[in-house]
Length: 373
Image (cartoon, rainbow, N blue to C red):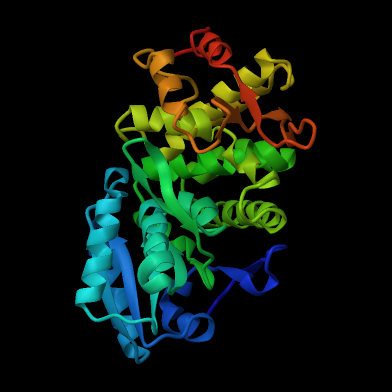
């Protein structure tokens, strides 16, 4: 197998729960050997959606069969709207009917939705099965497959039910991005912009300068983006596995982003909503004197170059967005917390707190202000 990079994801909480992220063009073709080395099991439950299954499930099953393993594919209808407790129950019940026991392992195969839902199945089925993340979207490769967060959405908001469940390994093959629709490729880049915004100004500069190559699907540029984003997330997760401190910084853009995504009925892709959320939360930080002036404009410029939305659509009322934020997991004492930055690459930390509670009235004033599209 041709592994370009091996990135260790360790844990200050439990060193034994560390794992590796394997990145390399073409390593999907070696999945049988990778599972043998990192996650041996009697059977594999491949949890995916119908779009990924149509493209890759037969090939994956044949490769595992050739390696001497049995693979059962459990596919559900694609889309964020299907990341629910009902789908989790359907997949879990189907696995029980298929006779999978505790000697099985789960392969969460696909974008962020199969990754989150498949991980949650692994965390809960028979009190926990081993897990491998095999992402096929850019967003999943650079963000959601790393860090052990799993879960499903509820009517109250995104990811309100879930568990921390670390994988045995994450297998990233950039070649799988060739079948990714262009709008999903762009949406994944929003998370890379977030990583640059919270941790690495030079990385953000490189993303802006490389926008043409990235949008064109240049393999080397995409591989560099994947590796650097995984490195940034791995370092943050190492410091804070369960989001009690610095890991909250990864929520930059997500408080308002999740609200906008939910309000759209998931017609906005996650990355598109986060792009809007980052700019609006930077504007919020500027309004309360936490974020340096010009930061929001800087992020807007980069996101616009990547073809991503960068302001709240006019048809979304500020009061409706704020209503969705109140159900956010980051709410404390009736006030919603926002992960803010002082400037590109510098997190805003006040009195040891990595999240800043902001009054709804202030958020409403920012959302109702200039710059909306």
